Figure 1 (tube, one colour):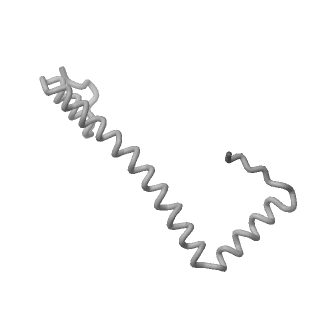
Figure 2: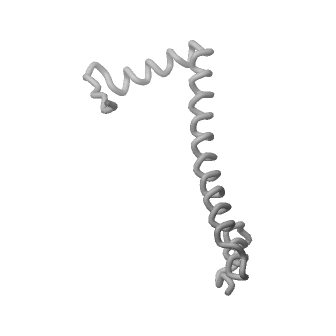
Figure 3: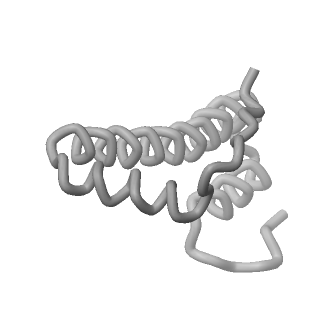
Length: 85
């Protein structure tokens, strides 16, 4: 049993390996690990970018002033509702 669509990805390799009589429990564990790495990689990247941006804001007062000005221009004097509970 082989995968009909051929691409050079780790997922296709594992499907071929399983179809060729590989150990399903090993394949399942490795697949869960691979999915976890994808999810954690995205989370860590987002976290790092936000952290870096906050660090730059703390270190640079001019950027802070520009952001405050832009928020005031956009929002004006109207009340802003906060949806985070």
